[in-house]
Length: 168
Image (tube, rainbow, N blue to C red; front, side, top):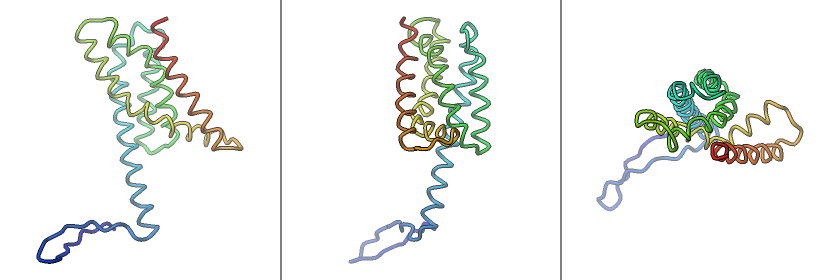
């Protein structure tokens, strides 16, 4: 595991962290980092779902997408990797509902709630690359690297469209 050594060179105390040496130790550390990242993504997705639900009452798809986002966050907490794709897709669908309420309309309370919701959506929207990889695994396509690139580009384009839709 990662240990801390106290090196004494020329009378000075130096604190150095040992790097994991074996492949197994590196894999264990990578798994822990991925687990923390997934837990953070699930927590922010759950927060954005809970905050977006009252904002989305007048939207044509808002309550349903917020409920799907909460279910996907629960699945992510349970350790299901496919939930990353559902979280990203749900946040993309919820984006046109939330961001106009943050900047274009509403009173101060709903604007603050919408801004906090947008802030909670950021980790999910930044996970588009991981969502594209999860979608490729779910579909079982032949050329996964090329398909992941196409899906990632499609998710980025759909994010741009989701931002532009309320202005139309």
